[in-house]
Amino acid sequence: MRKKKTPWKITKLGNVISLDLDQVLIDPSIEYKMVGVYSFGKGLFDRNPVIGSETSYKKFNRLHSHHIIMSQLFGWEGALALCSKNFTGKFVSSQFPTFSSDEDLLNRDFLGWYIRQPSFWRELASQAKGMGDRRRTLNPNALLSREILLPPIDEQEEIVTKIESLNEKINEAKQLRHEISQDSNALLITMAHRNDLNDMEKEKLGWKKELLANVLTQIQDPVEVQPGKEYPHFGVYSFAKGIFKKNNLQGSEIKAKKLYRVHKGQFVYARLNAYEGAFSVITEYFDKHYLSNEFPTFTCNQSKMLTEFLAAYFLCPKIWEDLKRNVTGIGGGAGNRRIRLKESVFLSMTIWLPPIEWQKKIKVSAKKIEYIKSEQSLIDNELDALLPAILDKAFKGELV
Image (cartoon, rainbow, N blue to C red):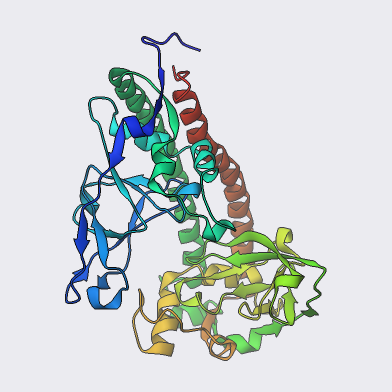
């Protein structure tokens, strides 16, 4: 541990920040630009605007650039953030108390990094009231009563500078990995679509227009839900980002009578999010996991179409847009969010299908890219762990 220039003092946050509410009476005729707070220290985001006549709240809190914001509902899981100029003048509900800091005693950015620590969230969680995670709430005093180890203001500024410098390097590394991933997807999309060729050129090379129903078969493996069993479960990311693990489902809590078991190598999509790219392939890790009937699964006729080709084909955002436009008559973006892609519509798609030899080349490339991405995932996990470790050292006075 490095020698501190001046002893750090244990200080209640209430000594350096205070409740600072700019409450505005709601006018039924006015539209209010609303803001939310992400959990896990991820900052603020714009929410859909609210017309005054459409809310039951009597007052909103107006944001200012100096504000510190806490969600009473989710502060215990890191829903705290600093405001910025981008959100100044916008509004939060009364469930989001706002605070200001004493600039002579507290560097606001120092606090901004401090409240991103999971250990701090756990301290707040001990002050939350209510039953169950979704009902626990924090009052402003839960934040004001927390004690932190506070260095002098000049040391706070030094610590902020060091954290920001290290965080910038972490973000640069993450951005590089993101660009590599995007380039990899672009390669597979190019190979699967060959937009550099016109229809006649594709035909000369052996490409054929094919109905998906002729090369895909929907597969269902229904399982009766039993109250005493657990069911491994997952979701499908939008924007072709793959599959992610969810908490196991408890049979006693499942309302549906059936779930559907999936198997390695099947192609799957989410009916509700297909129009924004929720397509993927079941990997070995998710073999024999379970989904609801909102996630149809298919197998390819491997003599005509390889799964790797189909996965590459549906990496393309233009395909998602075309699907949505053809079915709903609207463009992409934030159009009707409740429209589901029915299996009959999906299977009625006609695609350009390349010769099997070309598909095998896509398969080889996909496997190489999958290996690279798995290696990158390990590095990403290490990068994700760096910032919490840096913050832990910083607020113990150990950041050299």
